[in-house]
Length: 336
Image: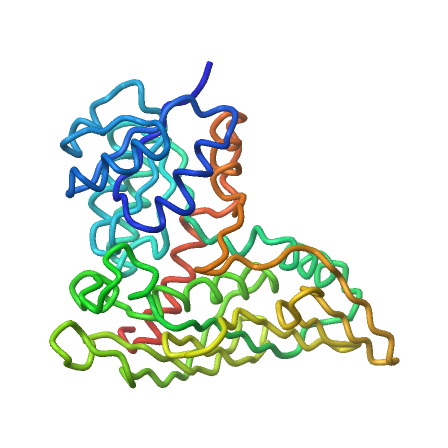
């Protein structure tokens, strides 16, 4: 018995990640698309062999749909994901879970009331290099983690988003809310929580709209750069930089400094994880290339979501974990 899934929002994240990965999953029979632009929904339905609904209510009320991917823009997640859960659907929500913790907690209440699965697309947990790094850290092969630094930057969402213009919703305060912090930053905050089995508690951050302009040639309303210092509950300290203005190749690197050596993640194109030990030994792992906007590889997120539905397991990225990362983003933005 195959599963029918729905997708809310037919932008780039649906086209390059959700739709192809659902289509490739052997348990998924049909994909139902909804977008405010019917044309856009029809394009994806044609491309991936699904069907279209004209209203979001049709998606929620269709009893054949077991699960929904919420790929709407940030400001709509707390509305769409909440409604999907309350209509008895399992939900995979794009990150950030909501534009603020208050709205995210409303989603958590809906999830508890519905008893359905809610997973959040923090896909960096799924890469082989990050999984291997976590294993090394957990086994204390290099002793305790002391400090860390992590970066995520590229040339900006206007070249990736479906509009391909500076009118992109990512640049709008009322839609994106958090700019590069919620777009790229939240990935790396979640990653640090995951790798270190810890939570960032204290934040000192600088944010700025340094270079991006909107469709009217005005500076954008949200930050395009963030540089911050972070301290975890267990006392680890580190730095993080997030940027939409790395006008060269994408940087998605992390370094973890431990008592007996260093883990270098996604700093070398073929050796995605390099372990440099205090005694001079160097171990190089050739695992898999990181996903970039230009090079889409299978994320593993959709397969994990479908698997947790079929086998009634807790999702590998829970809403509570997503809220913990969102709480840090609020601190970075000076909202808490």
